[in-house]
Image (tube, rainbow, N blue to C red; front, top):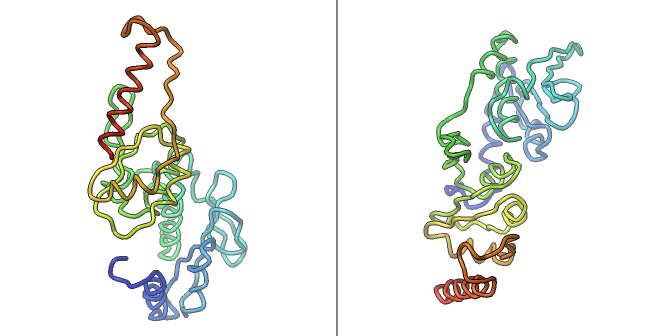
Length: 243
């Protein structure tokens, strides 16, 4: 994206790829993406749409917990069951799987070969990569998430209770779209790199640090008053560091 003056320029560059296709080519298009689906008019190739949200008269779509291919003769074939056959996290990766299946259909790959390939695929390094589990904590590497949109897709892939490491070199991004998901799913946020101050400013005010221990204080403090005073003192120190 850094090579383009605007998103419109980026989209136009992708549209030109379709313009260069021939009638015996295939164009795989996301039916749910309005911009992408509109590019169908730009190509003479045979179109193969996919959708995660609705049945299609022709194409690949999600029906319940099955990915189904329906051809122009209305013949249907169940390609796989995502909950059993897909190891990748995230709705965006389900779309990626459907693209791969569409390419397989275009190349006349066997349905069983496609199912086997998808079920054995464990993902690519640095893309929601499961690194290890340590003392019940899962560590996931999504270093390839170098844009706000990619970070949003990563957050959407988890139910919550996250410790999120965010930051690096700023690319002129607007971090406000992250606010609602971070408020919903992130319990600790670690900001790193040159963009940390900008991100902090964008996300300020979305959380409250509450001391409500639900336990007595005598193992660490003389009484609850001392515990409260220590908390207030630490907050004052933190505030002084950021002034």
